[in-house]
Length: 183
Image (tube, rainbow, N blue to C red):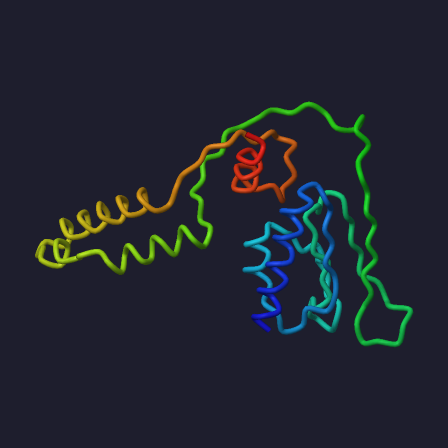
């Protein structure tokens, strides 16, 4: 099951890279798949809020534009023990969009290659300067100092301006990546 989720994540990332303004929809029976990491890594959102099989939500509708999709769970007209998803996709008219404010968002770039580099640095670090201190408070301060240094060396921090009307699926990381491609 993990390989399916990894393959889907790779496919979604490829689609987003190739067609950054496209609207993506993934739907189906996701029984036995833990999609939380997939959603976190891709920035997609699952919008089904009601049970689709018994008391479980197995049938999902995943999209990068939750602001443009409304989902309703209904009795299926087909012979199945699952309930049906009724999706209404709405694209707002430009005249309905109003001017909004902007804010700055600062975030750590926690993509896998940065986290892997940090993990390697933690593994290679000589922790004797922490372990040799007998005072717990001083040892903790030294540990924090080393940790902050390693994080600042391996996990970059970015600041982006996020307009108030930015869709929820555009995270500061995605905004940062798209700005770098434009510049």
